Length: 306
Image 1: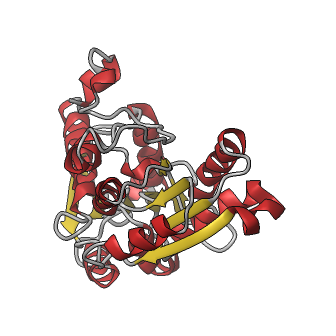
Image 2 (image 1 turned 180 degrees about the vertical axis):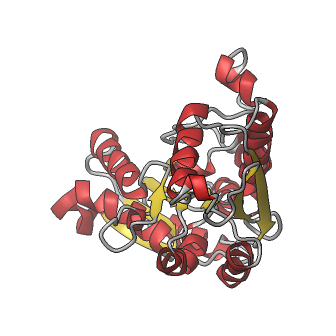
Image 3 (image 1 turned 30 degrees about the horizontal axis):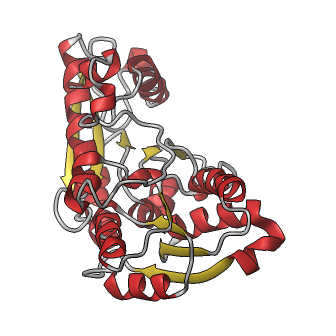
């Protein structure tokens, strides 16, 4: 994900300065020297969440660009991005190594709600910035209890409210079925929709099914949801499962208003594996420019990203 150079560099400059209580005495904080700033990250380079590994690769390319442009106040960024397989236990292990052995200044844009949650308390207790957590969970906006954590992407609950308003406009008397991940990620989206539907939520929702990130497939959940007779399908799932849900809905001959959450709108990771014909008619709120989406060909920002 390409972020504005000034915004990211500005925050890192501020953090590196805070880590230097007495510049004249050369007393730098963790990960900061006269010539470098060490930054850590965990990403699912392996496992079921590997679709998100592009974020880690883009982060590495971004910091390489910063270094090519002279770094930050003469300091080059030493960026360590390690695989956690989207496994919270592995996230804890890798994060502790990055903090305690590599002495990183901060953790940058590590991906995942359960993974970031697994290290949030640890990082805050140690005063290590959890910068731009790669998740839209509402819990990242809690400076009173976790002042060292800041999220980046739009809040899932806010996006859920957008879908709720759309449902009321497009299908005010619709029957709604939902597939969602059984954690903060899924519940935030669902709560956002319920915020808008209000008292109508209990009657409009006719079926709900959950899945776990480690599940091999979601076919049985789709069979149950299709049998409910719902004409609105809210699909709150990660890319792998979204592609499965699109294919299974087609195979079952179930063609509701299919709303897909923004984290699963990649052409390469979702639409292509599901099948372009089967994905026709999907509805989603998108805040990113998809690198493989023909709609962005010729866009200056995408050209810079590529």
